Length: 274
Image (cartoon, rainbow, N blue to C red; front, side, top):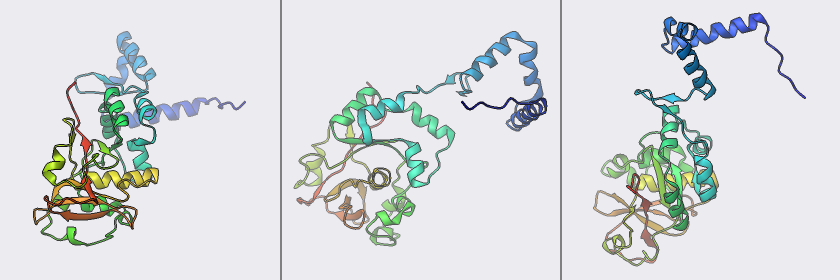
């Protein structure tokens, strides 16, 4: 059985000195180091805090401890349709800071919402580390888009590709189109949405499609277009899809079109009151 070699006195002193140095750099004054020595309550509080693993403390003194099994619950319910920020960071070479990871842990949808996502064919994934436009999502890996650079939606007049954003929040995206939403115009499609759904914008939809491909190696919307809430300079609704044919395609479709190849994208709303 492997054992850890005991520290000698000089090693202990080195580690103690290093601990004091890094804590001083973090803004802890020397007087705070003396508190646990001189005060029994402070000593007990510090011991309990360290045994808890040094969790984050809010400005009001409340300790934030995310339940350890939250993500396990999401994985149990959703399986591969749950994608954590850590998985995205690894697959997409992105960085989520500690505070943002804590935010995702604290805002994970409820068990009831997770069950709803499973029953209705949705994927739950972390959003981007910061707000990203359609063009910025494409820049992460242009090979996942049919148009690798430039293209109609990169023109200056197409403001939606720069102004609409996907954000650092959980994204609950339908994996396909809204059922029975083909051969309907925009207004007719809106009537198919439930009260807990909304139509995602183009960067939200493409972030979901490309992230699912990067992490799970599966294309969403492989052979159909889905209308998003983004609108191009001509007033046409932006649609995305047909991803297996060289990457995600981005097009503009008049709201009045009724096509076999054009359905509606949807996502579940966040922060719904019970």
